Length: 384
Image 1 (cartoon, one colour):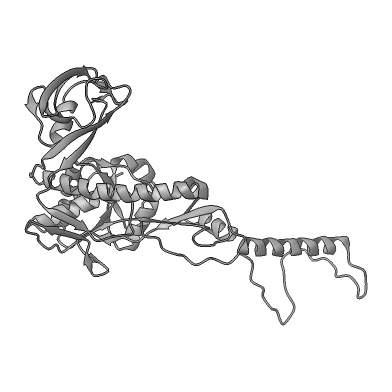
Image 2 (cartoon, rainbow, N blue to C red):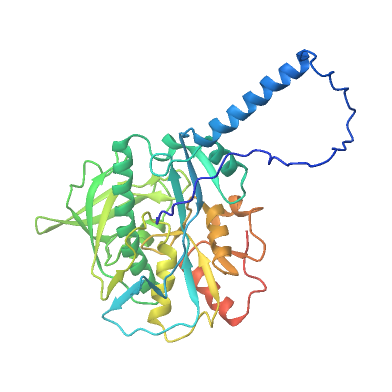
């Protein structure tokens, strides 16, 4: 995600006020000691306490803190431009302009190593409604772990763009062919000893599977524990193996195989943001692609923000930092926000004034929502 530096905040202390005349107080007064009288024990203790407080305030102001601070990051219109470059550039198909905005939201995370801030700054962030504080290690870990996390986020960003393109095309009725290559099997899979790495799945129960969605639907049509017959191509020959499916832990059937689909995209989609990582912008990219590929002006001038992962089948998944993203959407002028159903528990009670949240579970849900928002038909849109 794009990082934004925030200025360090000074320590919190009471301002000193100069009085030119007598001071009136509602508290009981204590007679002042006579001129030249020795200091009382109370005045000595208070002086020491005052010095200690001043020292503590100074310490809070300058001592670095091993915490990370999260805040709303910038938003980007997937129908617009960033730094003069189209955010989503599509080649290989006609595209159409939109009168509205589809803004992906981000979270900016700072740590003491990249932007020195004090314990006082951390306390101020902890008390703020628009920031959050976590131990630095829980976000970054060691230097090696941070580098690995950044590489993973970059890879997830690339994969998210591909999934966004595939799901958008298929949602518009354009199936995307794929080579369904097996890259591994879980130890629990009943097919672990039957298939090999680089086998390509071509049929399930005798029916051809040409897209990743075909495969997902074929497996999802059965109960966990049911047998499934999978045909693969290995060294130029077709081989069919039959084995029992597994329970994914939520009652759904899975094969326990790891598939790396190689999609044959009919269009070329280029995303013009470099310093954003992770998969959470996937749904908003899918919506941007769908809007650009259709003549209909779905938004009709509306500004809609949102977040959510997307897979190649159009399923919208949960993300992190949604409370900050809600604030960022409000600050960007959005009146509507699309949130994954799985995030509703965190959304509830944290919606900024003036922002309306629509809960979505699939890309179809999200596309219907922006179309209805544009048409002003919002009375029964599902919320959190």
